[in-house]
Length: 174
Image (tube, rainbow, N blue to C red; front, side):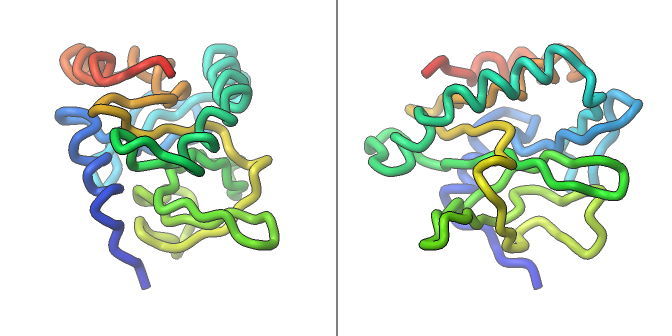
């Protein structure tokens, strides 16, 4: 049974961008864009895409920025989310995870922030466990701006110009 996302996650989904959900699913595949049932954009990117792979490397290199804010958020910081790669029968699917929690055994848990596309039986709001090695991106909101979100940047070229411009205006460099 799906769990409802908390208010901070709803706030991130609603406030992060006008008209485009930050929590669009990044999947591996041959096409550029399809629309998910939850109306979030899904951008398919090949695993060999150099721009996306560079974005994942940048995101992973700056993960300490995420953890520092996660552990001691400033009053202006909220909505800490991770993008996580899950193995699927088609290769892999990168999905934003909200309500992130560190577990005593070193694993991480959270809730799917959007509808998984290639994971039968999984729904937005379902709880999931994962390891830090599976993280492909991170983000949180600071003063209404998106901090992190490196994998969002290479997908902007696939969005309608107005949506891409609105999202670009919401990005902040940590």
